[in-house]
Amino acid sequence: MPSPEIHDPSEVYLHLHTDAEVHLEPVTPEFWPQIGDRSDLQTGRLITGMATDSDWPTWEMHPAGDEVIILTAGVSRFHLDDGNDVTEHVVAAPRYLLMPKGVWHTMDVVESGRAVVITWGEGTEVRPR
Image (cartoon, rainbow, N blue to C red; front, side, top):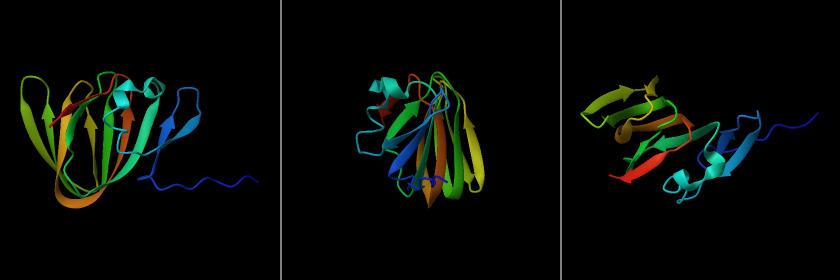
């Protein structure tokens, strides 16, 4: 019987391809700033796990699909920018957000915790905060 692979989600992300394959994506400092340039990540879903112990340094937007952010611990303040308004939403774990496609968003830490993020990668854009 084959053994399962076990990984730390802060070191390796899962990329669920549309062909039902799972690919492992090493986490590097360049990963998020360069995600829009990675044609191999433009289909399927990217699953990430992360500590929420510091504010996000950038805004991001996913034009082709909604994003799910699952807070498993802690409290976070999400800022959403739809091009007309910027709103804030404080979310305490255990809760999840369904982030609408096409909405710029970023996060501040209120109380450190953990999150799981499921992202549709196609066309992801990142801008400085």
